[in-house]
Structures are given as structure tokens and as C-alpha cells.
Image (tube, rainbow, N blue to C red; front, top):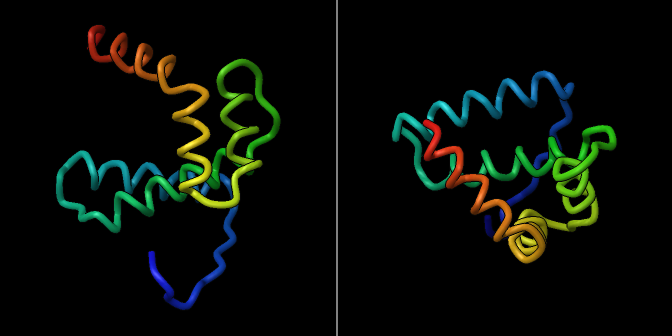
Amino acid sequence: MGDERRVRLEMPLEEAEALHAALEELLEGERADERVAHLYRLLGWRILASRQRGSGLTGHLIELARRADSLEDYEAARDRELGPLLEVLENVEQRDA
């Protein structure tokens, strides 16, 4: 997001998840702009990185999130390592909806 001044924000995981859900609702309602979409992705990455260890796919995503230095690094690693699997899962979800 440019060379802007930075703000460090800390909140309980439960509040971060509630904020993430509210941003998702904005995005689904198409009332959001590109900045809201970026913040949604950024918050999702940091929520993953703050979670306790998980197992399976979630555990792998948590590790990728923790190792990444930026949102872009996380998304690139996720797409590289899990992209095909995530695409299959998304297609199954859409088919079952």
C-alpha cells in the first residue's frame, strides 16, 4: 500500500475474526473498494499466523502464514504450494452450493 506511515494494531483473535467477517460481508455485498479487499486479505493472513498449530491443510496454511514476511509473500507461497488443491476445493464448494 505504498510508502505511507504505518500503524501497528493488536487485538484479541476473536475481535480480529469478527472484523474479518464484517469485511467479508462488505465484499460480498459489492459495497467495498480495492482497499477493503486488500485489508480483508491482510487480516486473514495475520489471523492464520496467530493461530495455534493446526493439522492437515489448515496447519500447512498456518506455517506458510508464519514464514511469510508480507501478504504478497504469503499469497505467492500459498498459490505455489497449494494452488491446485485449493482450486479443487473451491470448485467442490461451488458445486455443492
